[in-house]
Image (cartoon, rainbow, N blue to C red; front, side, top):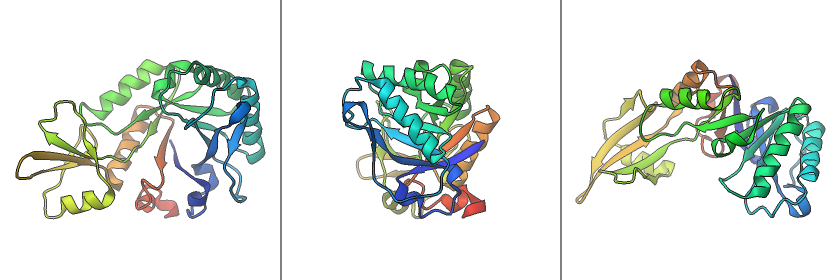
Length: 254
């Protein structure tokens, strides 16, 4: 399984990772169906390009945008593209994904799409988020692999840090910053959930009980190992989310 770090190019330049293990988050959808590229200094070629649909205008000419994406991949020797797309029912973006899936496959380039868009592709790899608050991660990945087959899956290793009320009627927690998590866990007993591949602890305030789930370097490595066991093709980590863990996750380049 190949591991990737995805980040803006200025952050990638601070890493000692080889470019082949990076996804450059410098791309968006511009006006008139053109590829929008955030300026960045020259870097060694290779890795993947990451394309965002944040504030994207309507894509009226998907072929034009696809040609520019493929051209950028060839120019910078990217081996494919990762779509960092928020879920959207927009017909133009779905049409773009379907067209890009076909054209990248013809160029022997890999397309990675979020799970929401998994059924839009025939050849692409589907990203499955590993941050769970219930169930079991093994079952989640196994069922996803079976559901999207023959398309492969990859792991979106989102670093988990959530504070849940007990009981939690809707199953939704409050995201914690690293500093907040660190303060809450001081002096508390920390446990490991094999089902979720995450650590947890509990605490009480004057009015409520809380359950905190979080990842560290070891839990993220276990998730990668589990992904490899179910046949996942790759795993992605985001900066700055794992900035303090790159040495643990990529020990050869720490």
